[in-house]
Length: 199
Image 1 (cartoon, rainbow, N blue to C red):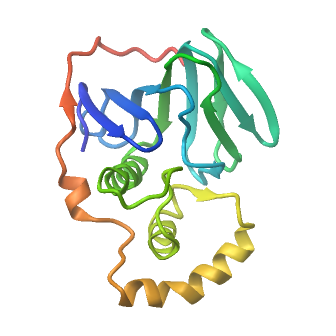
Image 2 (tube, rainbow, N blue to C red; image 1 turned 180 degrees about the vertical axis):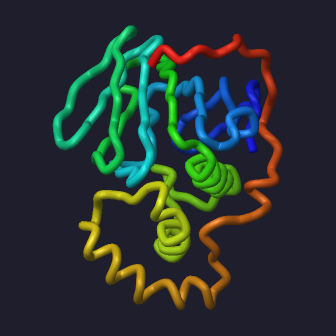
């Protein structure tokens, strides 16, 4: 579980998260992160959180958002709330590092998914966009389908394809979650200001 000041990095997608409110402090109900994304960096693709409320406040930089099929560019001071079940994606659209404050409610399972995603990237087990190979993706997607799923291919195709491939992934030793990533210490620890929700 994370604590305020923990730093997590994905060297492939260009994301660096500094925890403001960790799941340890919130009992898993909230995760608040200062997320910094380098120019050209992005989250790993359009996705949906079935049960999570996600809110964003842009602090610096220009952030491209696609929410429910509509694209826009957010500038400092912009705020956005993405309710559960809404397809969304976002990326750094400018030529400087972006800083976005992200709130996730609840946060515990999302944090586990991110620890695994970032761990795979840190260990060189993803492509240039941060996606693991198909069999690893199948295991990950089935483990964390309560947290997120990708919009491509269509959900029904995913369900059929993943059901067919899951036994092969399991046989070859792929898992949806790896304890070594959950136990991996943060890449750094920094001092953070006390948090009051403003998103």
